[in-house]
Amino acid sequence: MSAPPTVPRLALRRDEAASALGVSADFFDQRVRHELRAVRRGRVVVYPVRELEQWLERNAARALEGEA
Image 1 (cartoon, rainbow, N blue to C red):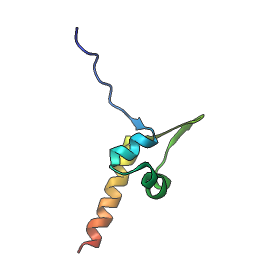
Image 2: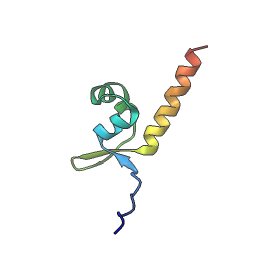
Image 3: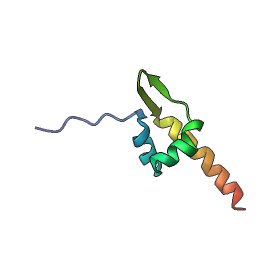
Image 4: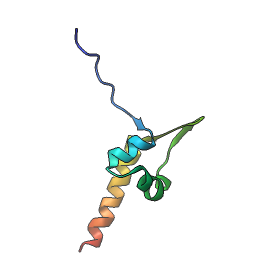
């Protein structure tokens, strides 16, 4: 019997989002979270993967510009 197919994640919770970016949850809260759009439903808050990818792109461009 084979394993069920993996469903790609469209959004991540706070700790997962921080881990996906390679930063601590504290760093995420202090330096990243306020720049992201989030989906809130009751007590659940998730961050779209696309939003995290766009944040990386915006900030990578800034870092490259500052290295010249």
